[in-house]
Every structure is written in structure tokens, then in C-alpha cells.
Image (cartoon, rainbow, N blue to C red; front, side, top):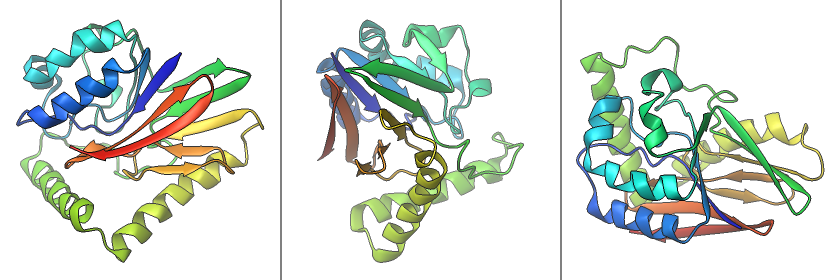
Amino acid sequence: MKTLVISDTHLGLPFDEKKYALLTHIISEADKVIINGDFWEGFLLSFDEFFSSDWNKLFPLLKEKQAVYLFGNHDAKEYNNLEKVKAFSILQAERYTFEENGNIFIFEHGHRLLPTEKEPLDINNPKFKKAVRRMDSLEKNFVKYGGRTYQYLIWFFNSIIKGRVSRNLAKNEFFFCGHTHIHEINHKKRFYNTGIIKHGLAQYIYIENGEIIPKKERY
């Protein structure tokens, strides 16, 4: 069994053909898919806008691969149409686990462990959307050019989640999250951050017969 784990794709508008091609390829390589939150960009568009966009070309393939859809903070449960999500996933949840070769793999997006927005959010407020777009533009430059400050911040955020979960993991348990947008593979702590598929950078993980295989590429 080859399981693909992705998170933080933030699918939105305009539609990105290169990103679509990348997702189609890596999903096709898997037997099963786990979408670990922030699949679509609920801070900038409605579920119906996402559902009717060209991203729906992914839906039959995801359904074929028995996709599990975990809600994130940008695509929270309340932003979704819980009937229509069945078009691309067989299970929807906040947290998911499965066992393979004696190991237990645990998945959740990460926003419960590291809240990044004050509730409740007024996602329809134009000022809020403008702020989201500004942050997205900054992140695009960070991803392209890097920098010590950016690296420090993202590793710091990962360390908070890691500290909150690692002490409670059994020896055969492995924790996977997203949310911070930084790919991390820490076998010692059994902590894995899926990273992002955004801004031309694709970070994702395959789990095959119990082996954790990180991937990174540009698209």
C-alpha cells in the first residue's frame, strides 16, 4: 500500500495548470491519499466557488484513491458543504489514524495545537481578505528567496507542535501535521510536517509498507 500525504495546497483562483499537473501525477502514483488540511483556500473564496472551479477535475481521481479529507483552519468544517465533499473524499474528519506493519500513523492539520487566528473570523470582510492576500504575497517571496528570519520563524512554529505531541507518542506512533508550511522529517521525535504545495514548491510524503518517504520538488 502506497499512501500519499499532502497538506496546505490552498487551492483557489486563478486555477494553476502546473499545480494541477503536479497534483494529478503524485496522486496517480498512490493507492490512497490523505489530505491533511487546508486543501482549498476558504479565506478567499467560498466552497461553491472552489467546487465549481477547474479544481474539480481532481475530484474523480481523489475519490478513486479513497481520499481522506481532514479539515484545516483555512478550510474548516463549517466552511465546507458536508454533502458535496463526498465528491472527492470517502471520509472527512479532524483527525485520522491508520496502522501498517505494526506502526500507528496519526494525522491532523495542526491548528488545534497551534492556533494562528483569533476566533471568530470574519472571512467575508474585505479587509480580512486583503490581509490574507498580503501575507500570501510575503510568503511567496519567502519561499522563493528564503532567509534566516523566515527559517527561524517556521522552525519555531514546528517546535511548538512537536513539543506538544512528541511526549505523548508511543514508540510505534508517528505524528503528521501541516499548518506551519514547513516540511520537517524528524525520525527521532517521530514528527513529520507535510509542508506545502504552493508558490511553485511541492513538499509531500509517501508512506509505503510502513516506510516514510519525503518528497520535494519544484513545479
